[in-house]
Length: 358
Image (tube, rainbow, N blue to C red; front, side, top):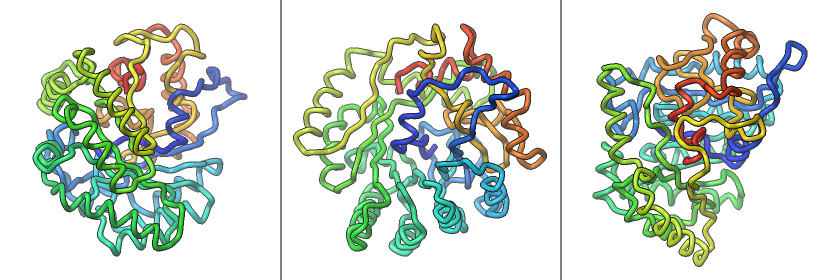
């Protein structure tokens, strides 16, 4: 997975209180979309479902430009669009056109990438199209750790490409796109967290975002080999399984980032245990179903980007219904209502964002 939407606006959205359960006269307004523009990927990262399922065809596992424009037409109040999902966005031949389309409409737009395909030509085209943010995944401070996690990537190439982005923006004397280094924190790379902070500061990114694994997949109790594999990997690599390991590493990373002047976001252990529900809407840690939607490359609508797996929960299909119809249809209403109860949807109970450990 290339990562969830971690743009500053998205960070606010995760922690803000949601709107009350809607009535027919007070439908929530769709403010942001995350679209999996490419379902295929050129890597086989160990924490991503892509690794454990048959590879998709890079030429066909795409969300078409025409359908993308139609989505924007159906959601005139959109403020932000994120062009990423399980696949690698830079595999889409029309990615730059999608960026330009959003920018022309005044919609903030960006994506997370594994960084392997950030050639000088692609960088120049994306910056020219009006890209608002660009996040690059770096999960190790050296080649050995990084390449063992991001199977198929080359550490030196990704860091070189990241430097290219920073230099290209400086050459334009521009402030955009905001450039962020993203790290998925696991037992495998926890000892290198401080070195990763130093690397981010040396490269010159605007921000470093450190997150935990997105889900424990506890709701996938069947014998699907892909889910068994990723569930086992998540259990083995989750840093929060041993609380004694994490605080000292986070404290040192925070200190070094402060010394270096790096804007650093670290995961914080929250008050909600696994499976517990908030006591009121004011405590709800996730407002995705009231403000945004995630759409797979096949057109399936899901409540958020943290689900990973379009067979776990689907609220509609934009190939058979309009997005506006799906947004106000009964499956969405039931999902929102369930999330406000002491027994939220099972797919939410293992979510790191819902549990406040992301």
